[in-house]
Image 1 (tube, rainbow, N blue to C red):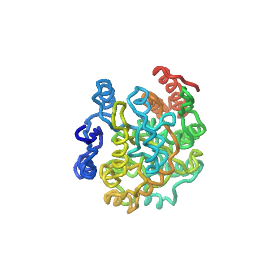
Image 2: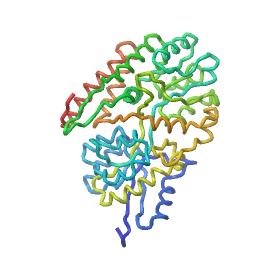
Image 3: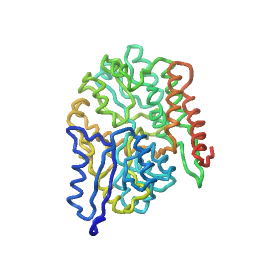
Image 4: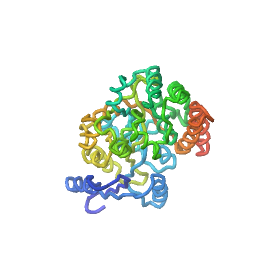
Length: 401
């Protein structure tokens, strides 16, 4: 540090594409306003898993940045590897700037290791024009959801999907709306992936699959895009960050007809939703300036319009995010960012465990079997239990079921 100036480094994976407010431009605003705390941002071009490997190497060599973008599902694993710094004493003063659900995702065992940046609360996308033609509304209960799905499927229209390649986040997020799977009690991880919410999710989706009342195309397959473009798919559970990607998948089909709604009380979730993706920014172990790093981080993560330009749904509650005009056009003039904010505030306190990526892989594998009839949806949650316990033990961690 030079002449009393604190220098902070920040590594991110934000898109920084054309038409967005670039991260370096956002940081330049901070640097102009804060001559005593200067920040340098670097973009990591690669997968999240590769960035974590790099951070692991850099922490060991003492060359790690002060701050790094870390997915919520990855944060406990990075914590277990000893890469993070406990910044609870600083985080406490900023926590009211963020929705409580996302804030819980930067914590392990009640201690905070950074601040939330963006979120992926699960919501419901549906073609309002098609719903009106069919004389239906967004179902409020599980029974209504199943009956409506059966009725519309008989007419070649599907109001629900079961996407095996997204089972890890979709199934855990919907089940997690009514209760967490992972907790820390003393020095032990407590695992229960077969909660009341999980059983309710399994029951609903099994009925949908058995009755051929949900489409089962993988989300990131061309067949999913085709189902929107052909008018087959008229409703799906989707993460908030999916809005621009869904518009791309549609190829413009149904533009102006789609809307966003909150999930119904389909799984005993009592108005709550769960997480699907999103990232925090964490303070790394060898940062010598955690106080200043957190001061910048709170500022950066509350630059709502700039973060929206990067395609994010900000976790910040300091100001309302405005819906980009092209999103508004596709979603029938609706202020979908307002719906996403409601979903953010309704997010249950779900957290992930170290090594969740192994659990996720197993959940997806089991979901594929539920799709082809060689397994059941309930198996996703029982396999998640076994894999969770085995993974934690492989990390050398104490587990109580």
